[in-house]
Length: 242
Image 1: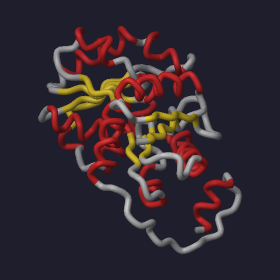
Image 2: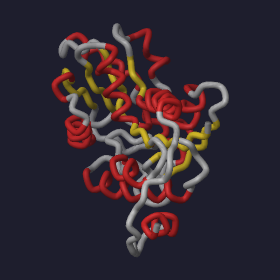
Image 3: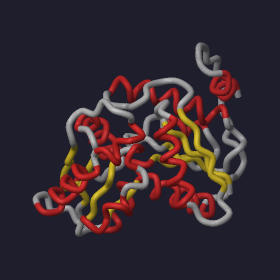
Image 4: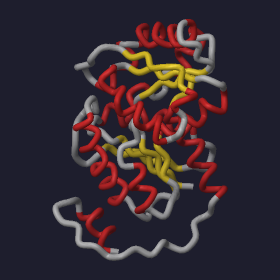
């Protein structure tokens, strides 16, 4: 199968990290292509950033329409995912929803750890949309980050480990989610230092996307009423035109 992975920010260093993690997670025979958002911010750290990332994600998906059998949106908070599920006739999986559901199957209570607390409101809202807020033991997040997003996993590795341990020892988490595309691939490196399973959203989303393609083969395209979208990328405009 062909899998498209969209990084909803514009940092190619983050996209490269996500791509490596996705390819390592994919089963033999899955072809993984990864792209950055065509416009937007280098790192999503506010609600405004997240809102811009939604249309950027849809534009990336539309530009590659027809070249993939499933897609992963590799941005925690899942910007544009609900709209993408409506617009595209292939499975679209966000790394947040994949991580939340995977963690809920691995333990009764899960914690969410990330590199900056600025992301917490979007994480909480995404958790509520997925109906799993009651299963979350809490959030552990670091201070604001202003460096290279592609280096945050290395630069904040010790802090992430400490936050994971606090989630387990103080909050009672039985599973810990590493939240954020820039943390893709970190879980195996720090797993020996944390006493519970760690869930990498990129890995969870890739595995779920592969499963969904097998569970629900594509049928006939859904009928849509043609609408005139203006001011957006050509691929997205064409998608709305029907």
